[in-house]
Image (cartoon, rainbow, N blue to C red; front, side, top):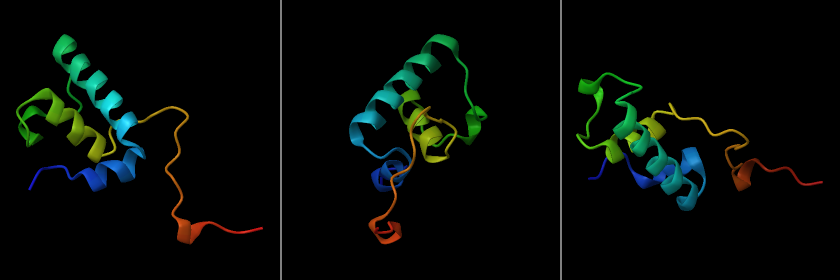
Amino acid sequence: MIYPSIDKLLNQVGSKYLLVNIVAKRAKEMDETSFYQMKENEYVSKKNIGRALEEVAKNLIHIDGFEKPIDDDMKTTK
């Protein structure tokens, strides 16, 4: 099984397009600055792209102006 799962990641972000952009930017930032939001031994992945995915899964990356989508069950009708 791949960690973290795509389902968990899409619950955090909302779209595959946005997920790819966020993770790519974060992985590039890790390459350039060597700044990690967790201790290096806490990551499952050894590559920065996987580490960026883990940070998204643990909700360590926040997106300005983005709200999690509301489940259809929770929507109220007028």
